[in-house]
Length: 125
Image (cartoon, rainbow, N blue to C red; front, side, top):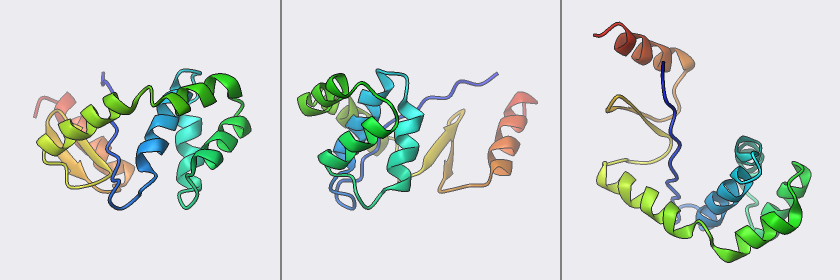
């Protein structure tokens, strides 16, 4: 009934390592471990150096050579920048920000807020 789309919005002025962290998540996606890497980085927000990111990749069971080559190549940097530019154009004030059928939901919200917004749409309201 719904489609979930994740877009990158690295706030590099606040988090200097955010761009590389976003790249790490995309590289993990190649091995079907996006959410595992996402969660690992979230838990370890204070340490997102390239060395740490490569260590997290090993910890969650990624193939190290493939991950390291992907991360070192900046393979996803242009796509992440495009996501960021789209977010700026959409007026996103920060993260997290969600859009549910064009309606913004800003900040960390309880599950009830999402359920109410989705239920309202599904009911045609």
